Length: 412
Image (cartoon, rainbow, N blue to C red; front, side, top):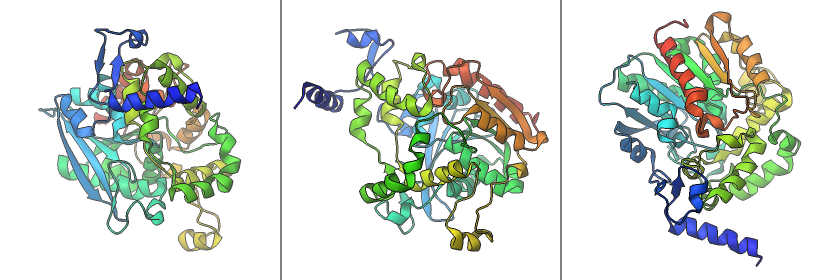
């Protein structure tokens, strides 16, 4: 066995037997003893445990969607709710609700709770906290036969129903990130009147609808998706593209060298911003954030990329005729949106490319465009929305201001 392989196995072993240490600077990791390092209990902890350490109230609700998936909604609220409208948050791909809460006071959720908001975090189907179904299990291939379409018309709808029932408020503000924005675009285009009655506004962080001409390395794999990538994923993982791998997650959290190595692989997908790496919280996010991806979700995005359109799922000509009355699936009608929407984008986002986001934004009727904000940080990337050490200055302040504007009805 090579020395490198032996070192790798040692690091993985130590990451299991030792608590995850986090330090204020990367240089502190190399010191034998430092008062700037501590064991962070949030690494590997479930959402309720993390939220209660913040000093707020937290509860979990398990609800069933109309197509039988059992999903978890996490609620977090201060002792005194002082804001008149609840906030619903939808996470991105390959993650769950932990993506919104793993960086303590550098998260949108924490700052909203401090402002007095009642916050609800969706765990989309298939993820670590939303594994149930009324008549299937995750070992069934058919369990994974959903895309972001069902997340929009089923999971988002179910979440909004729950929020209205628990909060007693007819409307909420939705904050989505990456795939969480895609799901909302699906819902608000196919059910525009219903969405306008349930939502005071939508804040889309790194919005993904149009996926043409992206810089991400995933575009180079697109020609190989149907063969051999998708068949291999079916054979090896039964409908999942990337299963959750605890060993890799923990390796990526164990010290500066693994952190930088793992980040170097991610920048090829999301865009590089090495200066944003947070030595204090990156070990936690590397353990908490990764989750599964259903191959069918990637299939749907691939269809959008191939056709250069934000299209509904292509089931094949015969099934399309039954579903849509046409052999070609229709576009999601962005022009039908009737809910105020605000986009937060970045020049260095290699997935939610700024030119694609702008094309989508300009299709929204002008009276429902509530702001198109391009980050002033030219290195801000897709991943920075939930992991950057500078995220409060680069994003959260603007989001809080936009929530205030939507809450006050100034976008309607």
